[in-house]
Amino acid sequence: MLKHPRLSLVALLIAALPLMVASCSKQSAETTSQTTPPAAVSVTSVDLGKAVGADNKVTDKTDTFKPGDIIYATVVTNGAAPNTVLKATWTFQDGQVVNQSEQTIAPNGETATEFHIEKADGFPVGKYKVEVSLDGNPVQTKEFEVKAS
Image (tube, rainbow, N blue to C red; front, top):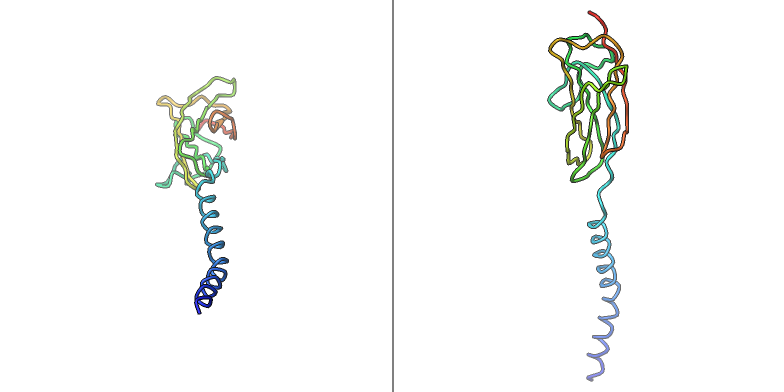
């Protein structure tokens, strides 16, 4: 009669084996997903305008400005990273750098970052551009113009 309890135990272990294997596989998949690095950050758009909203996005898009305007650029990124550097370099038509600024961001999904330039006595009339760099690499350039009133 002792043989039957042992057979029952063996049968129980054999029946439980698929559940134990599935549990180990699930745990392994969960561990893998937790150690996967976050998606790389990329610049999806750069918009220029005369105003920005509370979400840092340009509300009045344009590529033509007056000398006394504040010129805004919204850089929209997508992805995740604990430490990403965005840089905006604004230049005049002759290549002269008007302004450079950078911001360190820690995006997680879509993120809007605002840059702007202004000049108390007004910008000279002409063509300009803003070049956006991500972690030191140029990624997008937007051209714009300042025209007399």
